[in-house]
Structure formats: C-alpha cells, structure tokens
Image (cartoon, rainbow, N blue to C red; front, side, top):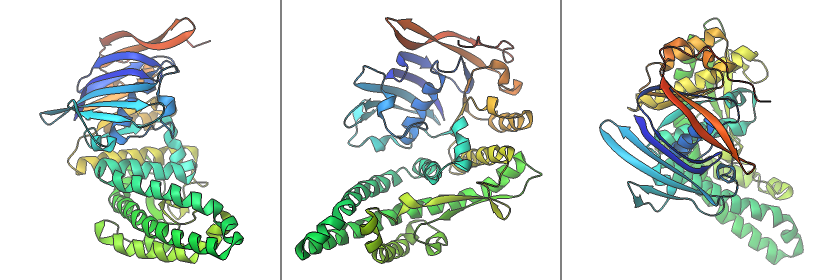
Length: 405
C-alpha cells in the first residue's frame, strides 16, 4: 500500500499543495513550525478520522477558512481508491470515494492504513489513560473499520447520559415524579451504554490479545537488556472484564458485567454527576517485568516502550494482510544512536515511508531517498507553507537548516 497523490486545501498552514508520491522513503525537511507534520497529520486523519495532535477538528482548518480539504489516492495491490474529505470548522464533515459521496465519513476507514511514530508517543507511557485509549481505538478502527460505528454510538450515548447525570440530583430532590422520570430515563441510557460499551471493549480486548506478544518481541529487540514488556487491559468495571478474550463472542458477557456495575454505582454517579463505568474510563496497562512502566521506567525505557507499541502495530497490520504506510514525524531527533538504528532497520523495508526532519543528518543513511524541502512564505502578515525544493539524494544532507529566530 502507498499514497500516490496528496492534495491539501486550507489544511492548517497549507492554503494549497499538491504532491505526487512514490513507494520508498520520502523525507520532508524544514524548520519546526513550517508545516512538515501537517502533511503526515492529514494522511493520519484519512486513516483514523482523528488527529494525533488535537482532539477536535477546528485547529485543522486554516485560519480564516470555513473548511479544509484533503484529497488522496491510495494504491493497494494494483487497485486505486481516491478519498476526498472535507473537514468543516463547524458542522459535519463530508467525504467522497472515487467522486461518489458517502453517507458517513467513517465509510472511508480502511482505504488507507498507516502507523505514525511521533514525539507525542512518549505520552503513551508517561501520560494519562486517555492517550492510551486513543492509541487503542486508532489501531482498532484500522483493523476493524466497522468498529468506528460502535465507538460513535457509545460516545453519543455517553454524552446524553452524562448530561442527565449532571442534573439528576437536583431533579430527584424536587419531587417523587421527577425522581421516577430520572430513574426511568437512566434505565434506558444504561441499557444502551452497556451494549455499545461492551462492543467497544470487546474490540479493544481482541486487539490487545494480538498486540501483546508483538509488543514483547519488539521491545526485546530494541532494549535486549531491559525487563520484558507486556500490556493488558484495565477496565473500570473490574477484573472480570479484563479476563475476557474479547471479540464478538464476548460482547454479551461484557454487556452483562457493565449493566450490573452501572446498577451498583448509580447512586454514586448521581451524587457526583459523572459516568463512572465504561470504556471511556478504562486504561491500557504497560508493564516492565513486575512493575508498571509509568513511574518506574527510565527515559530510555519509556522511549523503547513507545517505539515497541508502534512497531507492534506495524506487525499486526502486516499479519492482517496489509502493508501499512509508515510515517516518522521527527522522531529520530528524539532517539539515541542505537534506537535510531533499530527504527531505521525495521522501517527500511516499508513499501512507503514518509519522514519529517528538521535536521537532515538525523536520518540514518539506510533511509536515503527523495528529499522535499518545506518552507514558509509570508504575505500581508499571513504565513503559509510552501514546497521549496524536491530532489533525490544518495545520502542524508549534512547541512542543518538555519535556526528560526
């Protein structure tokens, strides 16, 4: 699989850019803040319908524009599909596949599959559970595009139920009629939350079962003298969920557990005005030996674990019969020599490898190839990203871009 063309209109710092891409390594070089990462971010959005940097779509639209447009053509085993995606600053997004409009943007999922390595990956080990949930959901929808529907349904019900919980306490104190109404409505939302939550959780558990041995293997190759790495699910509903194998067969069992737990904590949820049970409260446990990586891993071990998670995703997609587009967003600058070399060796065989770097010499020589220089132009006080140069080199450039004052 590789991206043959990419065109952006009003996407972040790019008012317009059109690129013809090829298999093999392509390296985007330029100073920080010039728009290199935005190119990779646009492709990651097509693959997952999420940004890896922000939670909402608003920042993706260039200042002053009403919508951003991402057009890309993906070549996969002799077949090509084009995606034309419009990201609205406000309101619903729209998409077309081969010029035909689709009812839901999530219908484009699965056309492009990619794994993105970024400096933000360190938060997978050291950050909040939300970072790890995002990581899980991103790989789930690439393996099972239909899972995006369950997640969207769950998020919709969660918003509705959370809004009710915020007002439930006051409503129940007003009268017995209001109390009965609140409890009856909560029964309806609980049923839906348990069902959709079970579907989301089962998908996550199935992926973790596949990912765990791959993470262990990848971590051992990066840090052979460290403790063994492993991952596991941690559900807010308790260890009964964690022990489930996941997958479609486990949905009913998980649904029953979630429904029971929601019943048990209902009074506490009403008191606090929060939804305390469900996949939005779950976590991905990262372990090194007998200890959690968070709080116990060194800086080097944390980076090794973050890399292992991404490398395992590449292996998992390959096992699923897909050669993903691999994207490396300025990660070589964050790594020591040994980890740079390991990452370069692993990714050199990718069908398509897209790399960004502020410093050309940070790129290991084995990844030499096409170089595209990115810069900025300013007009009437507005900066926009531009392509300055496009050439192929036999080895990484030894010159450093001038530091921005």
